[in-house]
Image (cartoon, rainbow, N blue to C red):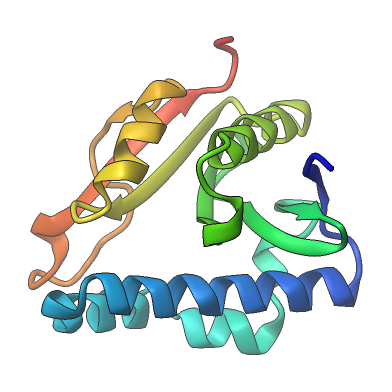
Length: 172
């Protein structure tokens, strides 16, 4: 059975998204254990604990959106955006669990999120990621993201390792 991608709408959906985000953090910390200080600083700066505790209000309508990819009611991946301004939104928390990888699900999630943002009236999508996440950066480039100036401030200890990207949403 193929994966379905649909907006998160219920408390159960957002609990699934929270579990996915926790898996993403655990995966990141395990994969980049040699850079644990960086992972701790980046996740701490992003107020991830507060997002998890509050249920992701910024990733819900009207300014935000969360998409979940499921197969047989199991959440395999997800991604969200939040409002930055009337014209710009920010992609956040893209992650695909191991059992969903290798079939283009991350790409499909990105494309679906960009379309949802375009339909909602946003003209540009931005994101930031760590330079460690080479596979993610490559994916973002294949769907049209390009480097851009910083749009968030990070502490000096980690800012050189943050990659900022954006993409117009009017492009195919």
